[in-house]
Every structure is written in structure tokens, then in C-alpha cells.
Amino acid sequence: MNGASAQIHEPFAHDWRVEILPVRPLILPQRHFTYPRAVEEVERGALELMIDPGEGMPPFLATCALGFADPIAPSGVWSAPNPKEICAVSGGYAYLIDTARPERFAMIPYRPVLEVRAVEGLPLLLFVGHRSIIAWGQDGRAWESRKLSDEGLTVSAIEGETLRGLGWQMMIDKEMPFALDLKTGLRLE
Image (tube, one colour):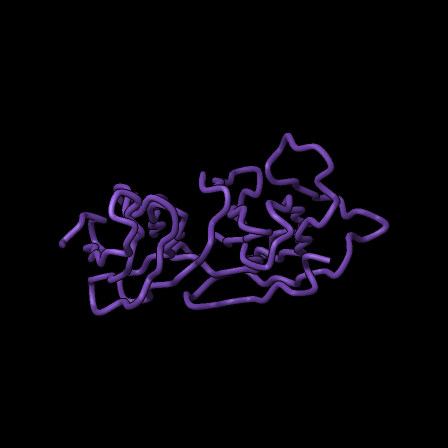
């Protein structure tokens, strides 16, 4: 079951509370949202979350479709730079949900997201894919890096406003170092 191995990560202050459910409730609550909206067999392995948005708003059930049933693809919940948003990752499919208006959400286009990292000082959530990185900030998508690898990225360090890592280059069959400016996503070296 996907929810059984998922964990809650709260690097940023937030307005909501969440419970990861081991299974979908037999009786669905009045407010139930499925992410993405149109998906076949969403129940199989889905991440089921009971979210209390706070501020007197009613709770809702979020059913987040499973991307990949592979341990390399992360599952869990992260707080986001915007205190009203929650980031749910189900088998590498990443959803950013507006808890005040749960019909509004964004899905990170990587299939799968391989790693989620918080950069608290800026603040950003980083979504690492096979070839590039997307940064999510207070107002949504902040930037996407250019291609950093032909297949497989390793983030080795975050030092201040610089991300360092390795990307495999097919033409030379070698991992090459790179550095990104975390404010812009531009390559420094």
C-alpha cells in the first residue's frame, strides 16, 4: 500500500494539517478530490490524504494517483513555500494542491520525480527528474533548469544559493559536475 511507506516532511510553515490514510475510507467524505482529475484506476496504490485546511474550512479527502510502484520513486507529503499549499508525491507523481481551494492544483511534469528537496532559506521545493530540476516557490513554479544530464542526476550539495551535482553525459560516458544558481536555475559551471 502506497500510504504505508509515505512520510510527512514539514520544512516550511503551513496552515493545514494532514493524515496519511492506510486505505480509502469506505464512506467518502462530502469533499473528495482526485488528482489528476481524469485518470483510470486511480484507487490502485493511490496516496490517500485527509487534509484539514485550517481557518475554519471543512476537511477534504485527496486521492493522489500512483505514478510508479517502484521504491526509487518517492511518496510522501511536503509542506510548500506557500503556507496554503501541500505537496503530495505518490510513486514519483508530484501534486501541489491549494488547500483553501482544492480544485486548484498543479502537477509537476516529470514522470517520475526522483527526489524532492527543500531549500528553506530561499524558500523553494526542488523536484529532481532524470535530466533537469524544477523549483517551486511561494508563487508557484519559479524556474526549470536546462538539461543537466542525458539520464540520471545526483544532487550532491546545496551551499547557500548554489546547488551542486553530477549529470551523466552519454557522448563521453562520464558523470560531469554542474552547479546551479538556486535563485534563477541558471547553470554556473
